Length: 209
Image (cartoon, rainbow, N blue to C red):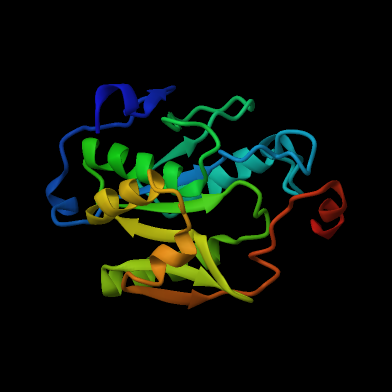
């Protein structure tokens, strides 16, 4: 990746202290909250919406990932203040493949083995759901994604060895993760449709309780 296309980073830094003997051989997982959408149908930044827990959607998504990952970053230029690093897409609004590819490049530079991505607008996704994906990934060491009524490529774990292929996808005309996963080995973990429900419009907020 050329320097002009290298995703920028800001915010807090990841703790890169020496790994203890107890953690030797442990696969390090980077949590990534995807916030790169325009939120045009909602009319405001979805990351700032109020979650039933009393937090914003973004704060809840960060905390949810922090419970299952070694560190968490935000992908996209959200207007909501937060205390974790932000990875700004090299080109804005080019789709989630761009954000995932940039996050994988960040993960490689900072010594992580995979990225666990979730979207900011899926507020009912639970910690138990994330644990089930993590356990499956540990057992298989391949791309692990959720499915409910269909494939959910934005809820999944992507090993760093797919950074190059995903970067190529992000730079292509298609940028379709659905099509890309169709030609790459992956495993699916079934979650409920309610947990994987996206909040896209003000009317959708009535489903959040």
